[in-house]
Length: 368
Image: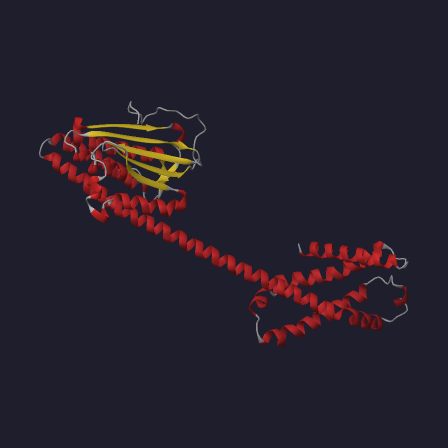
C-alpha cells in the first residue's frame, strides 16, 4: 500500500516536471523522468514501511522534548541518507551533472532537496500519529459500546428476574384460590405451571426468542387462566404465519395478558373476552391485546403506580431493546374495552419464506 501510494506520487511529479521542461524546449525522455522520480519516492516508501513496521510504538509514544532531541536529528539523518542512496543509484540523464563527481552531485541535491526531505519525513510522522490517534479513538469507542451493551444486557436480565417471580406469585395465587373449590383442577393448573417453568428454564438467559416460542408460552398461560375462570373467560389468539419466526423480547406479551385479567376480566362478575393478535404492519411487528372489563378506571384509581410491575417492566424493556423504534400504548376504546398495542421493528432475520396466512395453530376460531 505504501509503495503504491509513493509510485502514484512519483508518476504525478514526473509528469509535472516533464511537461515543465518540454515547455522550455528542453529535450528529455518521459521514461527517464519516471525512473528518476520512482527511485526517489520508492526510497521514501521503504522508509515509510520501516517506520510502520519497527518504530510504530515509539512514534505513538514520543512527545515533548524528545521530539526535538531525538526525532529532529533522526529526520535530518534519514533525509541525508535518502539522498546518499538516491545520488549513488540515480541514472545521470541530466547532461550538466555527468561530469560532476559523486560528492559534487550529492552536495547539489542536498542543497536542493534536504528541506523538502525533512518535510516529507515529518509529514509521514504526523500521518502515523494521526492514524494512531484515530485507532485509539475507535478502540475507546468500541470499548464504550461493549460496556454499554453489557450494561443494557444486565438491565434487561434484572428486569426479567423481576418479572418471573411477579408472574409466578400471581399464578400461585390463582392455584391457591382454586384449591378450595376444585382440587383436581388445581392439580392440572400446577402441571401447566410446571410446563411454563420448564419453558422459562429452557430459555436460560436469552433476552430474545422466536415469536412462535413466545406464543407457546402465552397459550399455556391462557390455558391456566381458562381453568381458573371457566366459562367466564372467552379468548381468541390470531397470529399470522409470516411472523412466527421473528425474534421478540422474552415474556413480552404475558404481562399484558395478565394485566388484562387482573384489571379487566377479573373485575367483572360476568367474565369477559380477550383477543390477542400478532401481524406485520409495514416495517413493524404489531401486537394487539383487547379485553372487556371496566376500562381504565381500575388502573387510574391506583394512583401514580397504576401500571404495576408488569406494564412498567414492558415499557422499560422495550426502551432498552429498541429505543425510539418501538411504541407501547394502552387506551380505553369504548364500553369498558381496553386495548394495548405494541409496535416493534420487524426482525425477519429468521423469518421463513412462505406466504402470510390468516389462520394457524394459534387461531381459536374468532377474530379480534
